[in-house]
Each structure stands twice: as C-alpha cells, then as structure tokens.
Length: 230
Image (tube, rainbow, N blue to C red; front, side, top):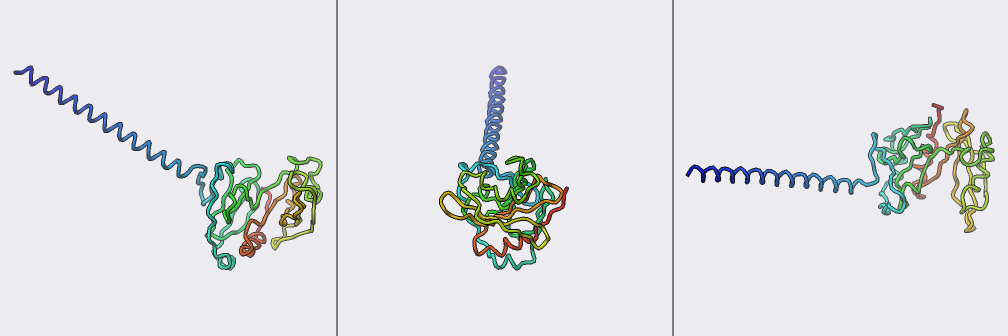
C-alpha cells in the first residue's frame, strides 16, 4: 500500500514539473512574439531625444509615407516654434513645434536634417546638410562661389549651371542661390549655399522641400538660420 502512495506522489510531482515547464515555454514565446511585433513596427526608425529620428532604411526598403496634412498658413504665423541645432556643426534654425525634425545619427558627417512634407521618402528629400568641399573637389576649398558654380559636375543628372546669385538671409548669413540645368532640359529649383566664416572646407546647403503652400514656412525657417563655429 505504501509503495502505491509513493508512485502517486511521484506522478503528481512530474505533472507539476511538466506544467511549470510548459508555462515557462509559453511565456518565453509570448515575450518573443511581442518583441518581434514591436521590432517590425519600428523597423528603420530609432527615436532620439527631442523627437529626432534616425532615417535608417534605404530607399528600396521604405514604403511611400502618407503626406502629413499641415495648415501651412497657420504654422507660418504661429509663435509656437522651436530651435533645431546641428550636432557636429554650429548651425541652428527654428521650425514649427507641430512638425518633427528628422536627422541622421550623430556620426553622419553631413549633419543633415529634413521634414516629412510629401510623398517622397524623407531620406531622399533632405532640407539641410553641410557640404564638405574637399570630399568633392579639394581644389575648390576656400572658393565658395566656384564650388557653387561647379556643383552640377558632381551629379550625373545635371549638365550645367543655370543661374547663381548672391544671397543673404535675415540673420546675416551670406552665400549664393543657384539653379542648374538637367539633362532632361529642365531647370532645378533654387538651392541655397551658405558660407561658413572660418571654415573654408564647408558650406551649408539648403533646399526648399515644401509644397507651394508651404513656402512661407520654409522662408521663415531659412531666415532664422544662424551659424556659430563650434
């Protein structure tokens, strides 16, 4: 009789152990599934402080984003603007708090930043970056106007310069506005190149990425742009 009781207790212990292992395995699978789902949802976008995101995936991996609906007239006249500061270079500008500044990670040498304002993937539609002249043509270092006039040579889709004019924003930053001729016989929108005092190897490049109705927002950003060498 005692032997039968011993067997029964062992059986109960086995059931408890098996049940515990089963629950543990199910728990691990649940956690793994949740992690996989979250990683899929956030793929290619690592959130940094202050709402800055890393634009990770290549263009082939990025689905066309839905263009945000902004009231550009309201944004242009709003007092609720905040300051974005470059991490490698000493530039800064203001932008509407309702918009999210998208920047590359801290080791990006161009210190680029943009906004999602249309159907083009943001990483293919940069608003501002810092050009390193020597990385394109070392003979143009210290020759900002010549660099702007020869900028088209660095791109296979361009065939010449259309127009270059001297430009200065409201903060006193000086540089050039330029447009270029494409091989499709069209003229590019104007780009702005700002000279950085005390830094002959770099220029700030700015492109108007906004739709026509957002030009007032872009112009306010452009005129708020400042530079102080770090």
